[in-house]
Image (cartoon, rainbow, N blue to C red):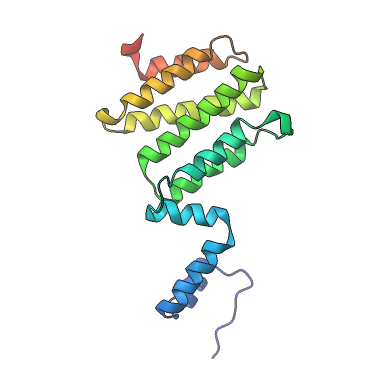
Amino acid sequence: MTKRKSSNPTWSDVKSAVSGIDQKQLLKLVEDLYRFSKENQAFFHARFGVGDDPIGPYKKTIDECMHPDIYSNKPIQIAKAKKAISSYSKAVGDPIGITELMVFFVECGNNFTVNFGDIDEGFYDSLNGMYRRAIQKVLSLPEEQQGGFRVRLEEIMTSSSGIGWGYHDMISDDYYSAFPEEE
C-alpha cells in the first residue's frame, strides 16, 4: 500500500522526508536555506554564534521599523519590529539578547517620538506593552545582569516626560511598581 500524500503537509511529513537524506544532502539543504533569505542568514548566524554581532541584524530591523527615516517616507512598522524579537528568540532563546532587543525596541520608539512629536494611541500602546514585557524579562534575570537594563528603562521613562496619550504615566507606574526602591 502506498502512502497517500496529504494536501496539507505537516512537520511530521517533512521530518520523515528529511530523515531519509544523507549528510551531504542535508548540508546542501541548509546551504539553500541560508542563501534563500537575509532572515534565514540572520537566524543561522544567531543560532550558531557566527560573526561579530549575531544580534546586530535584529537590532537593525528594529531600528529601521521603530525609528524610520521620515525623509524617505518610510512608515513605522511595529509588527515587523516585534517579529524581529520573536525570530531572535526562536533562533537562540538567549534571555539577555531577548531583553536587549525588547529594551532597544522601546528606546527606538521613544526616541522617534521625542525627535518627531506625538504619534498615536496604538503606537504608545505597543511601546507600553513592550516596556512592561522588558521589565518582566529584566526581573527574571539574575540580579547582577539587571543593572544596565534598569538604567536604560529609567532613561526611557525620564525622557518620555511630556509625551501624550498617557504614555509617560503608564511607563512611570510600571517602572516604579517593578523597582519601588528607585522612588
